[in-house]
Length: 192
Figure 1: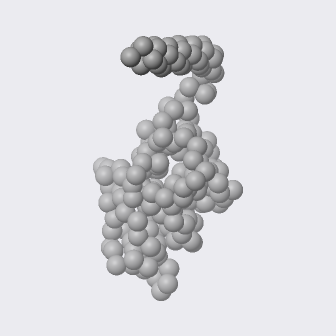
Figure 2: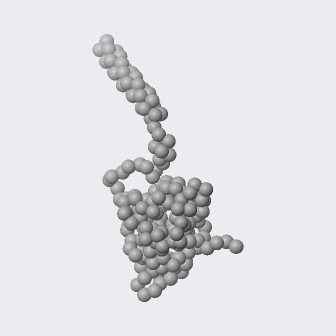
Figure 3: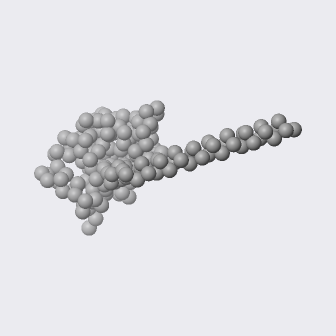
């Protein structure tokens, strides 16, 4: 019976030691993280979790594409990163850099200003819809309800599918949906 008591004391002591060491490490972590910069503290949420083991989500696909740097900058300026990594499924119609360059001069620079964040978010949400449909399956639709609560029209011209006047150039499956690369920035209709 004495051996059992000694064993219990030893095991209890061991767990107390682990608990004590764990608390000290946690305190060190808190001290270290309090020194982070403002930019680092902004990057919180699902969009900033690194995961090398799964299929990239729609945001990771855009970030990894050299043809979508303007789109990524716009998503970041509108603080929409976390929305693009949710479970979905999401269809993102991703304009290329050339599509943004085709806008009137100064448009992109103006939209990226902090005071135009809401207008930029509205435009970007017009490029997102729930679902995970291939280009061929989209031929069955006449319109889609977008994330900004507006509809976008779909037109089929031969093998081409145009969504809001933007032609789908290619598609990439994502872990949370699909990215359709488009040749034009779709501008939502203005409400009068």
